[in-house]
Length: 190
Image 1 (cartoon, rainbow, N blue to C red):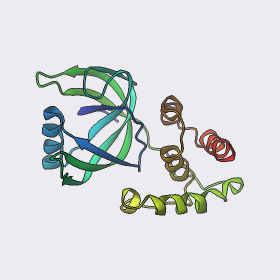
Image 2 (cartoon, one colour):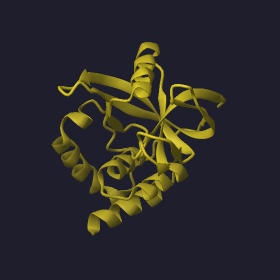
Image 3 (spheres, rainbow, N blue to C red):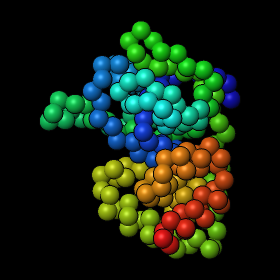
């Protein structure tokens, strides 16, 4: 797959491929990064913070997701609002902090999850998911829907269900869609 260099955005969230990422950006280092990514149609890497804070130094997990900016607006408070979409998972090999505080990393793309037909025992999930996504309005409006793909259904549920971040990160890292669907069922039955 090869190694590529991308700007990194450590966040208190887990982004899945195909999922939306709404952000409000106010730090100069990230405003510059977003502006450059939009001009060059380049991705940035989203990694879950392990220790630290979004607005300061942070250590992160090593598996994350590339994101591409799909929309932006200027908020009434003067902050930049963007929506990005998760594209591909990656493993972080090394990272460095530049003079302006921006982190950049050498990342290797992970193999994509192949589409998988949703097993019969989970056929009740897509209608539930569809009604929730429709209720969420704008956030999922521009997202391509794939209710017959087990990985797509599992990942959308992981985004919206109240599941702790460490568990979401484990799902992102291990790519076992069957285990993820079992977890979704468990959470829904609670």
